[in-house]
Image: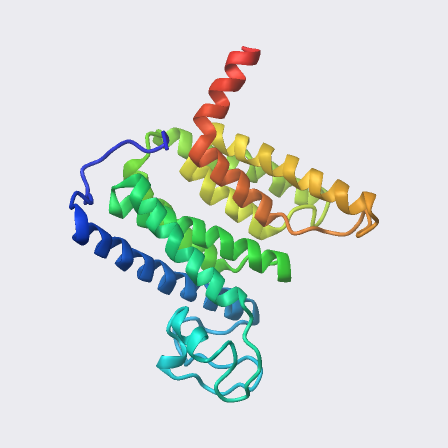
Length: 267
């Protein structure tokens, strides 16, 4: 991850049983955070508060107890059904929690620097949640953008991108898209533009251009597939946030390698 320089921070340097215990702890933490992001995915599009109020079954609306909300464990204990109405709970929830736990462990193992690993984990989880919401509802809640702003600010001490590159990155893609929206209304969603602004600040102007290029290519391939098999029509809008998030992550983790390869071939 060449975007980030090594900074003095907390590291995992213990060995043996203690190190394994920490990885188990990080798995549990990742699963809990994953469960929270599922709450965001379910509640924010409906305008429900993600902090106040008790969790409830979306089928019978019965409030859930704390022991109904333990990531992975509750699903197993309840045999995949609501305790009150016995409606089947989607397998997506425990799988998402489990994958979240493994993702955090993987990042901690790879990065070694705990703070940076957790911030990158939160960034990826935020992107996944945004992509899922946009795919289902074609909106990007402002709460998810605000959360990412704090994550990006937390990652900036590890960044080697200069301030002026960050400031140019905010506008270099988002401003033309904003102007395009005045010319062709609804050509790009406002949430997509906000997402590009925040991540333009994080990546800098060069890598946000790369991220947007990757997103357009992936989105174009997907749209071509839908049109070819007549699963949509030309004037139908597709959810673009998922492609943006993939492009941003590729640019974040592999951008320098891609740019070096490009310059080697064409410059």
